[in-house]
Image 1 (spheres, rainbow, N blue to C red):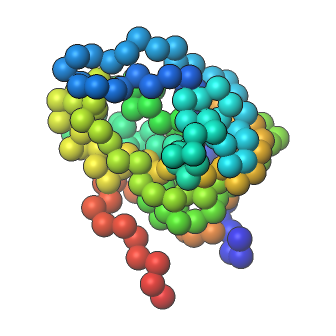
Image 2: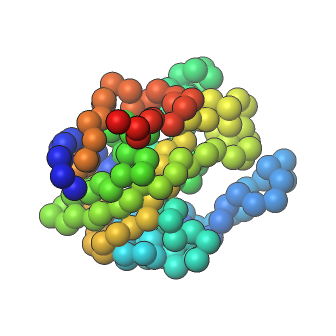
Image 3: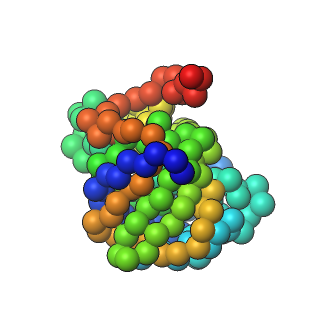
Length: 190
């Protein structure tokens, strides 16, 4: 990374789940699977989070670790008038507070936590699925569009720790926009 920006953030939740909970039709209900809100998660470069359903899956190498802004979930809950959601129901691996995520698409970022550092490449948006209407609240699927987070490829191995962290970014981020919906991807043109 050439220029770097450092943001004090918080890793509020680390979801590690060995199985998919949302498959089939939402009206049939989610599968009853073990889901861990882990205090730490081991990341393996090119593979994902050890013990997670996407670990080492060829189809998910570029999307093995998902990040979502806690502020996005709170904004959706406020818009829908439902109080708060269990952030683990969105099934994103890292619930991060204090960072706008959309500008990171296509960029390499580093999460430093608990004395460890993990590099990730944010490849594409993590679009919400129809399950969100069932497990969060009616209307959540549409409300999460443009703020469902980012899918990342782990570039280095290390450990992510819940709690205070630092996000190192090659692009400036606007923390005040962490919960905003992005309807168009940020332009990378000069």
